[in-house]
Image 1: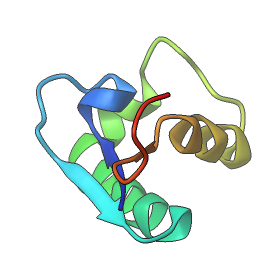
Image 2: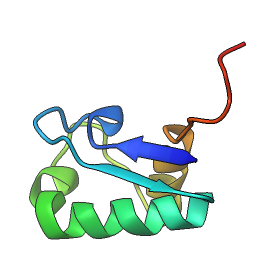
Image 3: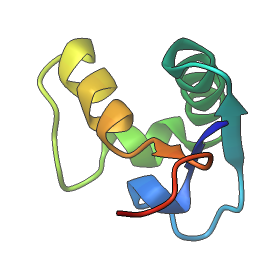
Length: 71
């Protein structure tokens, strides 16, 4: 199971966690949550991203695989 929490991407005051069997599912959930609950702070965060692909890459880098044990 793949997971991505708001805390993983720097939104420390929110306990939301997106989860799914693949990256696409997790991204869809997280992007929807950001758009519904955090859009203003996401757009005004310190780490500016130039385009949607850069933002997606940022989110993907923070997804955790709960089924994989740490090496």
